[in-house]
Image (cartoon, rainbow, N blue to C red; front, side, top):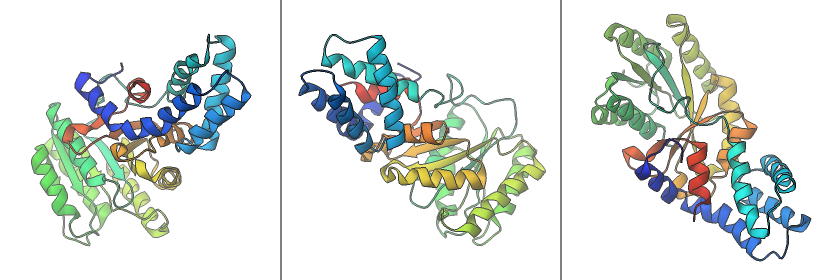
Length: 313
């Protein structure tokens, strides 16, 4: 097991039930009906990976690694393919997850500034609230900046989450300049000796060039005041969008320099294979995953825990 405790791992395993059935369940059925390990079997396995939203390119990489493992350590029978596939999936995810064993440990920089981006409906507000609560629980002073000034209810929803989390909030009237809100929040955090600043942004349609330009502006304004910031740019993606999430990741990365992914709603989809596509195709670490509605269901992503929960019956 990786960084999760027993309860966290149990929640992860439960949250991955649909993906497990869609990916590992299909693989298991293919292996069960196969008389021997041959090229036909491997091609069927590759097709099953593609069908689970791993993506053709990543599926090809996984199968290349699996073939190498089968050659180096040939299993006695077909049943030995599954553990080798698990090892290869874990290897493909290397580099994802938190930077340390404690995902909520902070580097020396204060305030530590996190910019949160993503389109409408992916769970951005909820993610910010849950992150704030976890940082507060770890003993940090947290400030949330409501820089989504376009959606009428955005500030109100964040205010509710800030109260739940025990965090401060900087909020301005609807229509205010989002970059100004972000600037004010970082200034306030510096004055108040705040540990963490989490900046919300509007749920931008990734096809809207002007809104992407505004994201760039927010980054520039923050950096002028605090050159090292933002220290982390988290892109929130809905796991159920599957391969569409890759396109969002590419566009947001170009606009805001995404440093990590938060993948939400994994419990409601069979498309959890997108984790592999993001990690390999985008070379972006998956920082957190959402496996339920509860505040503790936003979990730090651990490749070891993820693959163990995925492949464990």
